[in-house]
Image 1: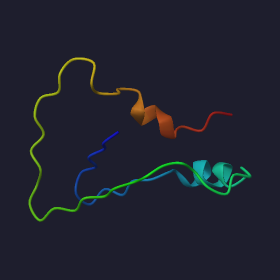
Image 2: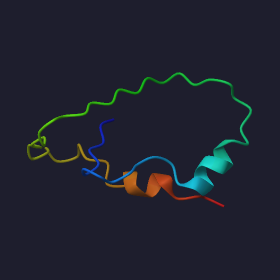
Image 3: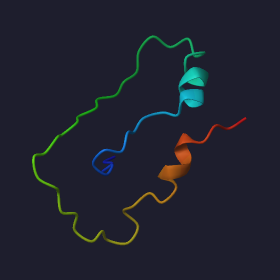
Image 4: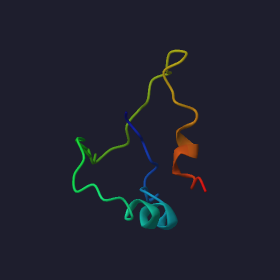
Length: 64
């Protein structure tokens, strides 16, 4: 998955989601994260149909 947050906009889990995740007993995950910082803005090409996960924004919502 790739995310492209606008310049100056913080990203990451909401504090309540972070606190809820801290309750899990896992000590590690099988994930790799790569961050790329650029000096100049990136240009994003138009995405083909079905590539964008339009529900991603809702993945940060707490599910009670």
